[in-house]
Length: 65
Image (cartoon, rainbow, N blue to C red; front, side, top):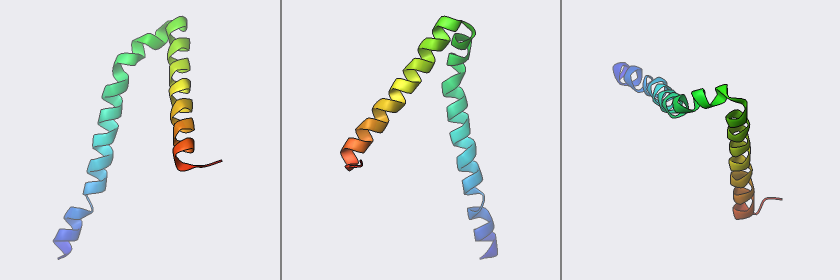
């Protein structure tokens, strides 16, 4: 039974590694765009707008004030 729990305890570390790898691979194509000031400002603006849209949508859906 102890061997079972040792095996199960490794899954969260594996999950964090998978999520980290997905995030790194998703952001890698955006790194060159941050080298030019105009595209960097546009990307930051896009991320802020996307976060605000998601935040407002969730607040409206959940009825939060």
